[in-house]
Length: 312
Image 1 (cartoon, rainbow, N blue to C red):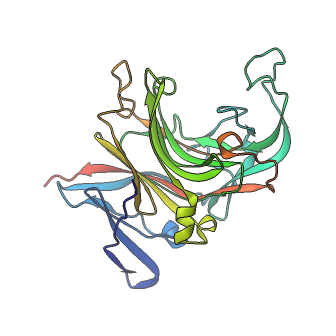
Image 2 (image 1 turned 90 degrees about the vertical axis):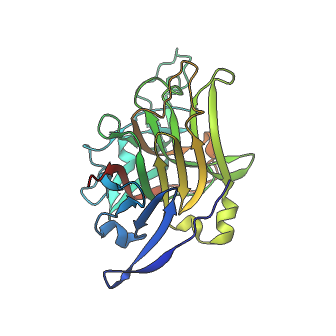
Image 3 (image 1 turned 120 degrees about the horizontal axis):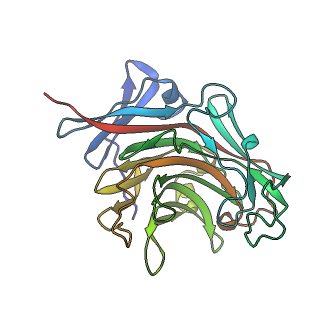
């Protein structure tokens, strides 16, 4: 399902012709933001509902404007081999802040597995070295939220082997019972490259249930041949009843939360989640052996807005 969100108005903001405001309607909410690097330096965007006296306000953001590493008050690192039989070894060294951007760099380089155990049957432990490194950062225990709007402006590398993601996980229960929301994934299936917008939770048969929407990258490139070289805005609009996932204002997936119930009756999308940003290599990303490295995943900002009720 792909639904276009029609532009209602394009104009100037405060008489400054270098800043352009794009106004669009998402569900029942009127959202106003200014795309591009100017937006990252502009005042906090106003998000508000046209009904019920509801208004969205910024509760958390990282603009990646300070220091040379991700802010430790916002982000923690995953270390080592972590999931999906991916090829990269996650380490802190591959994440940097430069010129107002978070830069996660994928490298072809040898790294020592600090958890190496030659007698282990666990793939995360029985490899002494990795041939690739990258970074994965998350806000667990530092910024957790339940419902609201998430906006992340990022540029992804679509080369063979790359698997960048913007996603959330629930704070309680193990995966998949905790719930996963994939605001953005880029990876390959059967030699086709896709943008995905998903949610996952626990099932019985199969043990993981997915509400998945995937779109061939060629569809975006046909509209804009420079798409892979540009920044894009991924948005999640989440309330008690549904999750809406957008790319540059186009609705990619709508997830009905009345259907996302684990076998024990727990709804993992009715609990706080935390945010993850990572660049995986290999596995669903494809074979990186013929890809030139390093590769970068660049994030301009990450923002979370929540709804407040205005009393009159």
